[in-house]
Image (cartoon, rainbow, N blue to C red):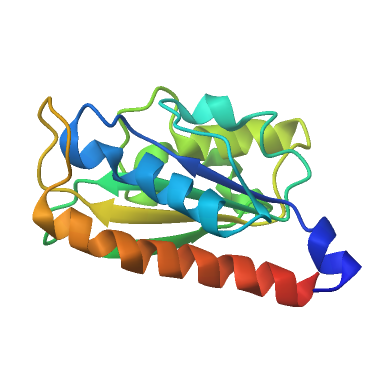
Length: 166
């Protein structure tokens, strides 16, 4: 690995609570990524997107991993590239992104705020895993547990892209 690749800054943030079954998928994937890749810094588990402010400054890549509830089959993985520099998104409401959030301001609002204070990461990607169970308790549903290795692989692929471009 070149010196430039070592200087790339990658932040992974797992959103959710391990005490709410499939909601713990995000923190689990982020932890596994940080264990497997010295380039990635795990800043979670987080419960509010506002917690990303200050954590992602000057990052080449930020990957947010979270459980979703969209009606897709459990374990479905979705990857969403978020445009952190597009001026047209400054006025776009959170619900226009097609994503709902139980987290305070929502990721779209945090991106707008970070953009306003010139603190957006270079690249922001959301990796969502469709959950089945969000009741109190520990342990992922079988479908979500089975999706964890694929989610890890996808995030590592994103990190490899940063290494290649650094």
